[in-house]
Image (cartoon, rainbow, N blue to C red; front, top):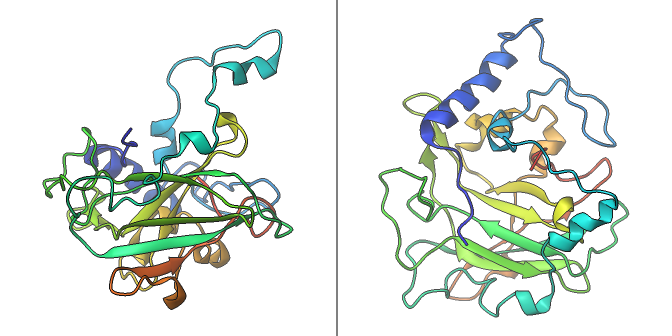
Length: 263
């Protein structure tokens, strides 16, 4: 199933302007409201405003008397649920997708460096022209009939994951007439249950659009920002086929990879 792209461009404009104005002291009080991440000291960071647009709009459903009963209606993940081509987004259709082939691999660990085994990892992205295969994406860039832009895999015993895909293109998102989101990959990690889901995104090294990105600028700690950027790794190249990038994810602790709260 195609994952949802960024909100429609008119909404993206509103949500992007909000962090910019807030950072300039445009909200009540004149200073950015501190955001406290679990296990970290409070920082004067302006949260990504798109989170509010993705929150549920209906009241939460009460589960009683046993809170664990919520898992009875949730998905059950295992090797049988992941197909042999789910990790290779370039081989899910009859033809070859357009764009630069890449492989993205890394390890998922906890704060002590211990591997997180059997973790379901989802990836979704725009195509090489910067358009998502989703009905709500109205960007006038072309769709690619041989690229859906979604994949998933399970981590191995060392906590490693791996995808083969296409480097996504940048796309305009309405902050101002010349605002573009840099190339990025969305990642989702499910833990051991749907209710533990974390969502984050990965940027590419050397992308000149990254310093201008509203989500990037919502993080004021340089270390947090650096953890969202992959590293080019020639050892991950597939000869004559793809360039390799390494991106490790830490789930908790002071060196945790930033995730979108409320997802």
